[in-house]
Structures are given as structure tokens and as C-alpha cells.
Length: 116
Image (cartoon, rainbow, N blue to C red; front, side):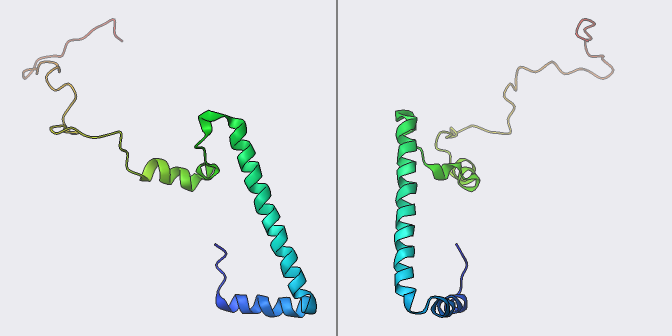
């Protein structure tokens, strides 16, 4: 997610030791508590949103609003609703026998003056 390698982590730890020194354990504890509180607030807001939307949206997931998730869910997953039946040919015209009669050589197609 953040794409931080081992070298960057070492630099961050050394920098934290230089900046905070003896207060580093206290600062780390405070940062952990703050992150825990932020996570709880986000979960509470999500739960309140789902409760407010009603039973129609009980399986609603906010992650579905992410465009990548939306595309993956609706375009890339298999669609179980469509199951082709044996003998279905997608290249066969829907109304193969209902077309107009073939015209002979030199015949003019019928023309409807009221249609244009």
C-alpha cells in the first residue's frame, strides 16, 4: 500500500530516534491510541450509515463505491444469470425465416412513398 522498503524503514526509525529520543515510547503509544480511536470512529460512522439506510441496504459495502471494486464486481466476475442453452448460436439471426423475399436480378425493391 505505501510501498516502503527495508531501507526506508531503517531511515524512518533512525529519524524517529533522533527527533523524539527518550520520548519515543510515549509518542508511539499515543500514535497507536490515536489510530485505534480513528478506526473506531470510522467503524461507528459506517455502522450508523448502514443503520440509517434501512433493511434494503443491509449488505451494502462502502468499498463497492470504489470505481476499481465496481468494475471488478460488475464487469470481471462471471454472470450466473446468463446460461446459454444448448443450440443457442449467437451468430444466428433472431428472425432467420422472417426476412423479406429475395429479389431477382433487375427487380426493384418495394418503395413506400409514405414512409419517407
